[in-house]
Picture (tube, rainbow, N blue to C red):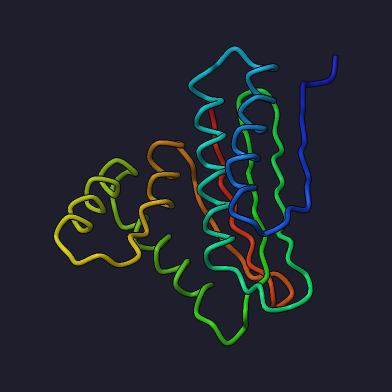
Length: 161
């Protein structure tokens, strides 16, 4: 018997309304297949956070206004990837790497999450960076990123259950 695997691979229009639509769709798909409701909630949350970042920080000045969502896995593990266009002159990729490096400085994702909450509470309103830390902690994800072809950024969340 072959192991149970699944895959979602979608081009997505870069509209804010699509974040909730896809978060809900991913959640519904996984609830229909798996009994682990908490795991399905985590997959949907991580998907939504990565989509929000792609839309917020993507370079949408060109003709192509799409990003790519990929969700792959098998029983016990899921990989979520979101790929969006970037402006090579912008610092999006390096800022993301700095955030991931910051998370990695902590002994675990919970410690990073608590530190981020304290940081947010102690400074004036700016971009918080909480979404990625939330993915690491609440989503039990290992996060990575890479620049693809010089003009796209791919963020990957590896989750195990």
